[in-house]
Structure formats: structure tokens, C-alpha cells
Amino acid sequence: MVVLEEIEMRNLLHINKLDAFKAWLDNEGTAWRDGRGEYQVIQVYLPNGQWACVYSRHDMPEHYTTDRRLDGFVKQFVKDNKK
Image 1 (cartoon, rainbow, N blue to C red):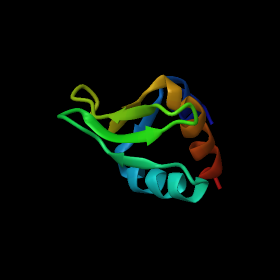
Image 2: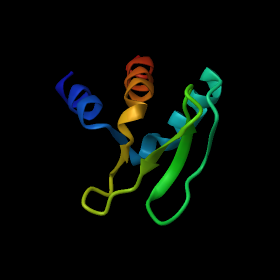
Image 3: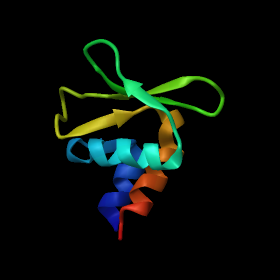
Image 4: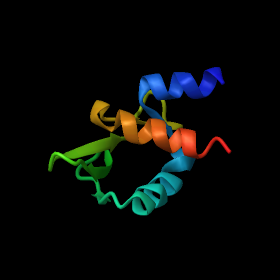
């Protein structure tokens, strides 16, 4: 589906999917924590020991932007939830 492919390519996560994404991270055994500051929504712990962020957007409030290092996580989340 073109819309899902565009979302995967642009690292977007719909605002309504945040709770499902956090639950998916929990199921995958991936640590996450609340974000810091005005724009960070959550931080996700990466296998390399770093934290990557999901950010809120003022120009597109219905979506969050994700750090490029979360590409694989978001892509797999979208794939797992296509069902």
C-alpha cells in the first residue's frame, strides 16, 4: 500500500499509533522511556547502547517523526500491524 510505504520512508508514526508502538516495543523486549523537553515524545533504547527519539511536529500534528536509527523498528511495527 502506497500510504504505508510513504510513512515508512519518511519515518512517520501516526499519533494514534503511539500506544500500540510502545506495546509492540515491550513485546519485542525493547526498552523505552518518556522523552525529555518540548519535542521528544519517547526515547527508544538501541542495541548499540544509545537512545533514539520519537518527536512531535508542529507542522504535521497528526504524525510523529522518528529518528532515522528507528527505521527498522518502525518498518517492522508497520509490517506487524498490517494484518
